Amino acid sequence: MNIGMVCYPTYGGSGVVATELGLGLAKKDHQIHFITYRKPPRLSAFNTNVYFHEVSTMEYPLFEYTPYETALASKIVDAVLYEKIDLLHVHYAIPHAAVAYMAKQILKTKGINLPIITTLHGTDITLTGTDASFKPVVEFSINNSDGVTAVSHQLREETYSNFNISKDIEVIHNFIDFDRFRKTDKDHFKKAVAPNHEKILVHTSNFRKVKRVDDVIHIFERVHKAIPSKLMLIGDGPERKPLEDLCRELNICDDVRFLGKQDAIEELLAIADVFLLPSANESFGLAALEAMACEVPVISSNAGGIPEINIDGNTGYMCEVGDIDTMAEKTIQLLQDEHLLSQFRKNALAQAKRFHIDVILPHYEQFYQKILNENK
Ligand code: GMT
Image (cartoon, rainbow, N blue to C red; front, side, top):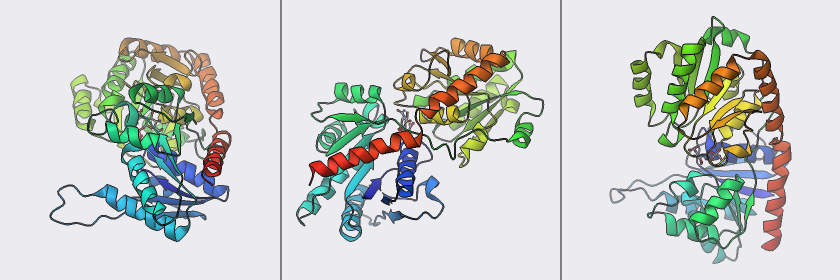
């Protein structure tokens, strides 16, 4: 198939899922056309069957807000006309689903029917999508996509309860590429981060409020008092500065490393003992799944779709959102029991394998085929 892929070129979340999906499909001989405003980070190397169409916007003094949607729709139309794209898959509803609808209407006037699939990722439904400034457009564009998928059962249900949806929503979980995410020997690296064999806790996110990274720091402070340990914080975002201040206030700066955005997250996960994800909401929690694939148990909240991947008392522990005392207690319990920790590591890997790219990718291929058949 010749597939157009529209996404945000981000380091995590929906951008990563779209990129990994495109790369996986390209390996299976599909032609993948990424249409984004910047090259997605995981698309750096040359790949046969992968093409990149950069959306550029025109500067003009009248445009206080650059009309990105118009530029994206024009780029989609151009790519479909000249690359003979069979189907367009957009990730994150805002604004991609509405833009796809616009491109579809333009192409219709040229005698082309472009099937559109929208994948809902989380905040497009739970946070931004329900804001009055977006809601009618999100609802309309979901209902007017030819196919809709959600990354968890919980997100599917939340979409039905937040909007008036007439479409079937197919659940296709996020997935892991085990060629990349697996435990490797990074002992030299471990010695550099934890020279005195301290335990290593890790958290990855975009440092937005919804991630509750301040809870991560409070949990670490409690763990640190009981067990010699280090905390690696990977990623960047609006909350970083107050979080740095919090570390100073708690006097734990020597044992907390803010590592910023990292390309090779798997190398950091390879040396970690526990992954912390106390989010207020999380439609899936891909970052936790990546940790589990690297044999790192997860201490998380029980928000959103997290219970679809983390198994309480097996691959880690799940607690109520904001219950930092229990999260710290469970972390200490796990880190103090080598036998339990090693069992949880194995369980985490086994659970992650259920989301192996080879298992999930065929679901997307079947879904694409179904939508193409319905649109013949
Ligand atoms: O986590 C974020 O805030 C980014 C966001 C996105 O769309 O890029 O992530 C969402 O999509 C990910 C991939 O499907 C999910 O793993 C995350 O759970 C989800 N984030 C939230 O629901 C907060």
